[in-house]
Length: 215
Image (tube, rainbow, N blue to C red; front, side):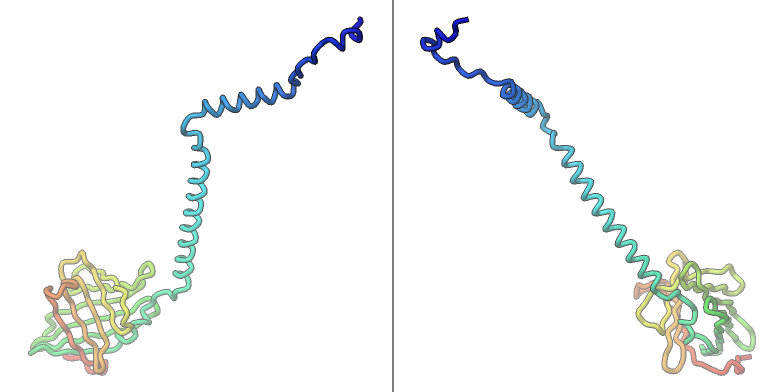
């Protein structure tokens, strides 16, 4: 329709933004409004993710530590009464007119039996049935004096392989029963606990032939 005749007298029209530009601007506007409308805790998902990773690392560390402890326990030899072989045999001690006798025999790797008695003027004034056995992976000293109910004392770990201290803190007296090997015999004692001021009774014993029991 005659657009060629008017092309020289009209100023060029401003460029019209393309639909693509409009869409970009619209998307940018939406992103801006969305960012403005975000709450202050918008970063919580990232924090929860980080906390989850930290918890996972802690769980893995705890599991590895438990596994190392289990391996260490399995690698250690199971406790047995053979470690107390230095207690086996027959022992005697004298206190004034009284003489005491104690003997120990290892029946197996899990139990050893003992018996003791005291004589005064040819009469038995005290007697005791004893044993040490393995219970739930621990060495336990069981004493039955004068026919009374059995009292259990658990071995206290220590660094001296020729000393054994058995404890029962809940018992009235004694709370501990102990044995220690000496160059010429066996030294035993009972006491009321670790404090220096508690009651303590000592029994220095000498090794003798098991055929020489006092009568």
